[in-house]
Length: 289
Image 1 (cartoon, helix red, strand yellow):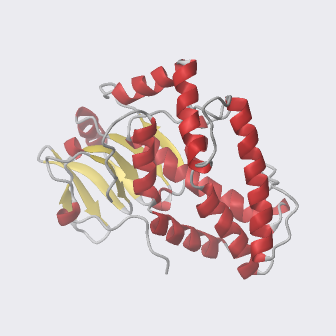
Image 2 (cartoon, rainbow, N blue to C red):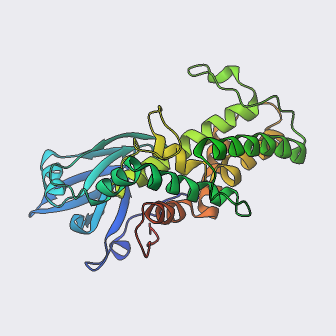
């Protein structure tokens, strides 16, 4: 069985009062209020008091139910809620707080609305993929062109490395089965990565709808961030698995291999740290599970 991205919640692993955790993932249990505090009752009957005042967000996974009173209490503590798939590999919805701290969102909007600052954030993202290139005087269009060429070359390189046939990136929404095996794996892994990143973006108080490179799409910031990790996470793994699966898509093998690679790369911690840094905050702190 593949490793899980998130470890089981226990009293010992809960954050201390001095800490502020970006998020806590819960699944297969009930969130309710008892004695004015929020309690988590898991499927084994274990009862854990959750210090919601020290949490930015609760990620509610499969098999989770929550009472109306629990929603009121978490909202009063400025702890938001997100509804996600297993291990946050899919993102469904988020609850927004009327009293939420909007400092990070204001910072993001300020950067995005200023052409000079927005381009600088984009340039920092491209610099991760072009560490030896001089991007100082490059326009966004020029950097996107460089990235497009790099990715197309990367696909060909991986196809040769793993000896897999490749005719290009193809995906038709709603017709997953019409794609070839490598494209099916890429589509599945990209969707899972978007789910993880969407949860992180919401948990830190930013908006996935305000990006710096992508535009005109539902989740520009998520797509911006995803491009930082796709090469080592999704693309390399997709071509590797294509060779192993010998023509037949196996969703369990794909999800298991994806989880293992996410853990190996520490995407949860890395993406949290990268996002905070890119938005201009100093002393970015790693997310802990």
